[in-house]
Length: 243
Ligand code: GEK
Image (tube, rainbow, N blue to C red; front, side):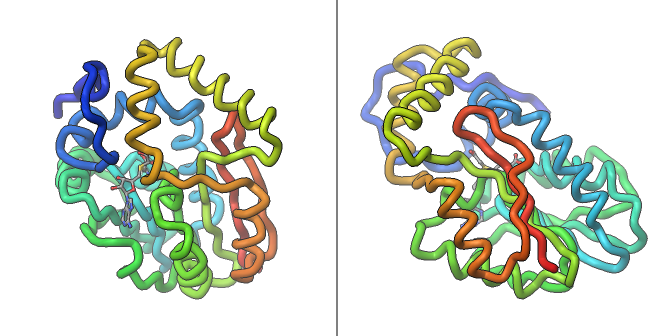
């Protein structure tokens, strides 16, 4: 499969709200690696954490799977018997490309791709649920129900791996993290125009929250422990454990 370079915002344009359409799916691996600090480390470690918590005869869900990077990492590391991975994305362009991508690999743990909204998915018999930078694209009012649904569908001892872009609670701290992230993007070849047009496109689509807000939601849903295992600038990943 050809992997293109992300030049979506390289020319001045009337910026529309960001969508995970065909043009984004085509350049997605390049886009996410140049935009999310530590993306490769996060994806690889998600596989390792999944292997540690995957229980025999259970399901692993990857909600908002895009091209299936986290699912593939989990399938590479999981050694448990009778595990299956269910990878979900509501973008048809992503799900179709994910199908092609995943087909190219063989592993003990099969991956099934479902093109649907996370909100229509009933999580069942799960030992691991992965949301790698997906919750941030769901309107905040619907996030509590999604996390509760995940908690209900997890087996005892199961986990949710939740990666998110975060806001910081003090304004000056937040500005520092934003500037460090923009510098990361510049060093990866994005121009000032690309950075600012992308920011505009994401303004209403990606509504970020602080670590404290996420932790409170996870605890309210019933999770016992929330471990923040990765942070670089304003990007973090956490593991929430069901006792
Ligand atoms: C990775 N996890 O590479 N239902 C289903 N999918 C959704 C929904 C929804 N309601 N809203 C958004 N998505 C991936 C990266 S990208 C993160 C995840 C990013 C999907 C959307 O179509 C997109 O594919 C994904 O969530 C978010 O490990 O681009 O910053």
